[in-house]
Figure 1 (cartoon, rainbow, N blue to C red):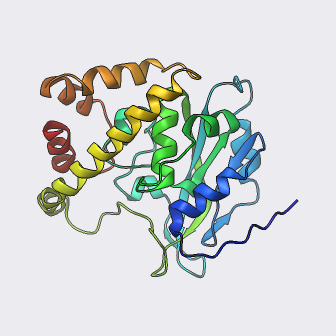
Figure 2 (figure 1 turned 60 degrees about the horizontal axis):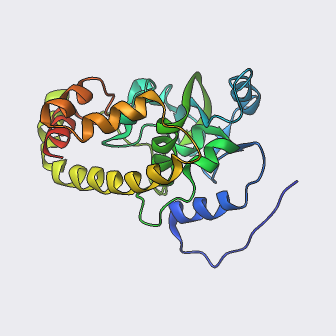
Figure 3 (figure 1 turned 45 degrees about the horizontal axis):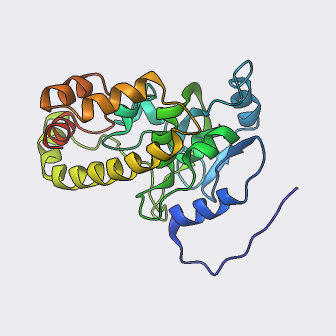
Amino acid sequence: KIQIHLTSGGNGAMRNFRRTLSYCTEEFIALCDQDDYWVSDKLEKMLQKFEGKDSNIPILVFSDLQIVDGSLNQIHASFFTSSSKSSLSKKPQDFFVNNHIPGCAMLFNSSAKKCFEPIPDNVKMHDWWIAYMVSFFGEIVYLDEPLIKYRQHSNNTIGAPGFYRHSILLSEINSIKHVPYALHNSRHMLALLKEAVNIKKTQFPLNPDGEYFWHCVNGGVLSRFRLFRKSHSGERYLMSLLTWCLL
């Protein structure tokens, strides 16, 4: 069935999704907005990834996306092969600098929802928080197939980030100027995560990757560097390296 919840508007993408998620009570939840075009068997294929898994464990499945224009003509066949984002992202360190998984490509179970709620009011984006929290307590699974036609146009709130527009060398050099912003975001997210993780540990045990993440983050520069070397940052190498070292 379809339920419509009216709002006065002007809340922004993160708050709208946070509010909508609060109404969801089913076993599986998928996010979608007006720009997203699902292939016909999207849910069927993603639900298959949950078969045989413990429903008490937070699980998030995500797929690739085909980037298209407003008329659904292909711009990029694969979001992950055309951008700096990585489909291998599944551990906490992979989400330290930025998010890799667009919300529209996610399907997660009710245990994941219990794990990541409440979403703090001052989080940059809901999908970053969702993936980050699940990486501490559960499992993130990638389905290597574009099950979303993601419209890329001037009216997108966020758009498809991380696409290569310049030479790699020039992009690396230009990325250095973004270090203060990335460092601010990473520190802010860590502060929110520490509080949330301490609360959720009473309900969900930290997985080994979550335990190792906090051990390294709370250590010295060398510990953080080792964790950085194992991460898929989703951003330029220099910017990510400096963000990790200056934390």
